[in-house]
Image 1 (tube, one colour):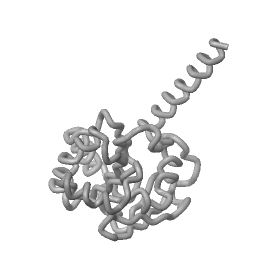
Image 2 (cartoon, helix red, strand yellow):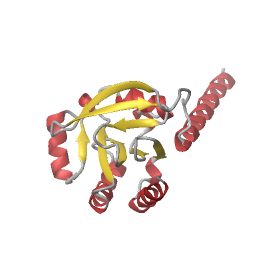
Image 3 (cartoon, helix red, strand yellow):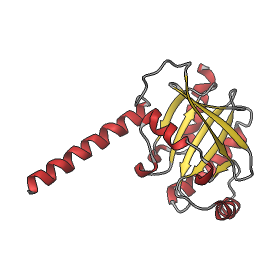
Length: 190
């Protein structure tokens, strides 16, 4: 019985590590032609701005931000690493105002009225979306790279101009200098 338990546990750990490898490379679940729109959803910021999001094989296209690099962060309101990323994301938004837009999604289900207070108290200066206003965005992300909130936050996806998924950034790599280097690399290559 113990052997069976450890075999199953080991198998699950291996599967989880393989999924994270796919997430880091951005290679999970890509089986459709790049130009084909797979699905459309709408997200709404806590200020009431509606953003249409199209999912295709290459990534997510945020209508109105096609000519910007989109930093899509998933965070939890009580998560210390998530809180630590706020000043850096604020600075990046101000450093690259013509090139990027930061959109962050609260993944732990904090209600919108409390989220507005949290945003004010934490001085978040970029677009924030409450989980209740995310449409099918979690399904889209899971279809792109296999990530879901159960794998932990913060989790950052960086989409190049036109919505192509350029890079996934796991919690331990979310720092301002690392993200700035990614932005500069995308600006040079696109």
